[in-house]
Amino acid sequence: MYIYALVWGQLILYVGKSKYLKLREKFHRSKRYNDCGSREIPDYIDWEMKKLEKVPEDISNIRERYYYDTLNPLYNKNKPSDKPVDMTQKIANYIKLIESGLKRK
Image (cartoon, rainbow, N blue to C red; front, top):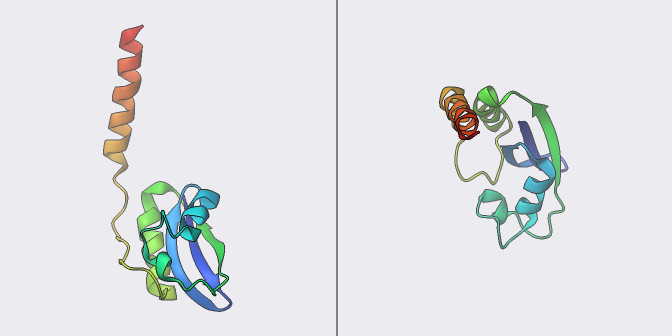
């Protein structure tokens, strides 16, 4: 998981996280498909996406919140959660999926 910022010069406009930075950047640039705070960035601002950190998914919320609190982005609508991602349920679901595939054969 990547933690990133949308920046314009020294201004931090938005902080977020994504597995796929290029795809996420396209959504940020789209006025049609973007429903987050970056939609409010004025068109005349030629921002760029900067990768801040690559982190394991289970701590991505904590790290995103750290950068949000530290950098004070101007256009985030919501404060990110600072709770770790619960990987337990994700792993259990994945195991069930694998087991169901094995039972079919």
